[in-house]
Image 1 (cartoon, one colour):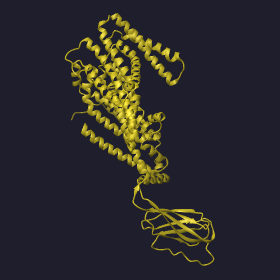
Image 2: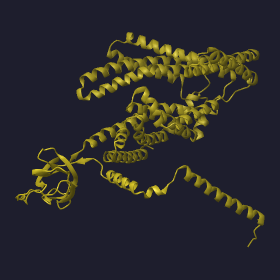
Image 3: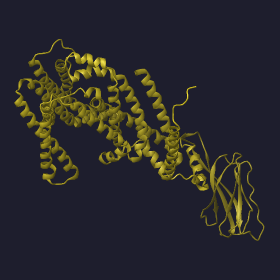
Amino acid sequence: MKPSTRSPWRRLARSVGLGAALILAVVIYAYGFEVTQVDLAETRSENRQTQLVRILRAIAQPEIIEFPKSELSVDAPFFMPCPSTPWELHEPNPRQPYILVAPSCIEPGGRVEVRGFNFDPGSRGNVFLIPPSQVTLRLSEMSVDAAGNFTVGVQLPERSSETVQTIRAIVRQNAGMPRLTRTAYDTWSKIVETVFLALLATTLSTIVAVPLSFLAARNLMKGIRSSLLGISLSLLAIPAGVALGTAVARLAGEWAPRLLTTIPMNLAGVLVAPAIAWAVVRWALPAVEASRPPLAVRLARPAALVIAAVVSIFGIVFLAKFLLEVGGRLADSLGELAFLGHFVFNLGEILEIGLGLGTALAGAGIASSLSGRLVRILTPRLPKAALRAGELITATAAGALLFAGIGAAVEWFYRIGNPVATLYVPAAVGGLLGLALGIRFGGSDTLPIGMVIYAIARTVFNGLRSIEALIMVIVFAVWVGIGPFAGVLALSLHSIAALAKLYSEQVESILPGPLEAITATGATRLQTIVYAVVPQIIPPYISFTMYRWDINVRMSTIIGFAGGGGIGFLLQQNINLLNYRAASAQMLAIAVVVAAMDYISSALRERVV
């Protein structure tokens, strides 16, 4: 056996380190117990145990089914105080429910025992005192046992009378077949609302998260590099693109109703515009090119993309007008199915509202892309001195514009009211920083702008994911009001960040072979994504989307506590009212729906993925 080469001092140090680690762990957990106020004595409190048992028993009896109730009233005479003359006792019918009072006479304020027979087992009720004045006084509750009997002792008030008084037992007992409770119907309505709330949030977030995920994929962004001149011109072109896109959307909204005035004409525009746009895009972005196209073709392709974008905007306006007109007519004529017309109408409104934002973003993207292409074309053809001067000028202007925009945002949030501090000074500082960057990096081949975009996208997604939808719904409830719409918006915003992160990580794990093959043909960045990335990510994207729907169903049960609609809103009400049987029905519905969603999503993932 080989002898140990460790010295005694090293073994001693290792033992001391292990002991110190154990002591540190004990101290940490001891402090954790102190901070979290662990008090096991509370678990042995008789009062808390009684409350816990009561709540657990209520939860174990969800308020789902009930029987129609009928009231049975049974009387028994007695005297208080005892009369001076003899009296005859009440003779009950032993074949019917009856009660006996023992003793049958007593001094005022005494205690008697009320016994009942032949009642429905399990029924409950109350015992009352009916004096000659007929002013009913409730004495006690009672429960009928499995044999149909009950016994309860009651304390009588000091209400003496020379005439006979009455002890009355009123029992509520089942009558007829069982039926669903009002709580069951409300729970069903809210659980359906919850499922569709999660569905709409997942759909909306998926549409937004898919394109954003490419910006947060390292393997796609690390290869994107640009010169300082290209970056500066792109930043300067973005506001112009936003303004141009907004103007085109406004003009399209004004001219489209004049061009196509009827529903059939709108429908024709809806069909023709996408066909034209698709043909132009296919020409501008071919799948494979045998050789490098000439300069005229390369310059014409961006212009063709702009034309396709304008045609698409008009097509969206045509579609929005068509949906609004058709949806309004359907809502007026479908009767019970009017919700279909309302849905079509709402789709038209969504297109109208989103058109301005969409065209602004598209204009910014197109302007930035065109400026980058222009720089790549002109760089080999211009003198170095001109390029150097252009870099310094554009870098200074871009820095001033960027910092002025940041200052404007600060002014909007905090309303400082000092243009010098929020506009001119930031613009001057940004211009100086841009000039310094131009001096430092001017003349360099390229800068890793892709990794900058990647870092910004990741930071934004991480920030949004760190804020729970329960917090977001508070803001949206102020904006659109308390209800499921606020829940849809809150879940959508949180899901966009979560899905974009999952999607981007999936993009980072794709096979590099197809990327290299498509890139080797001279394909553009967009062509690489369309033909090399998208085919590899469709199955995992579908899987992640289904999983997110499952998560959103569970999250939507919680955001109702903050005004986000769904079954969580109803659950919160019942908990606040201490109606634990109704709350149990809602918790049972949540468990059933979550389990069903998990099974369905697993089955769909197995089939699709």
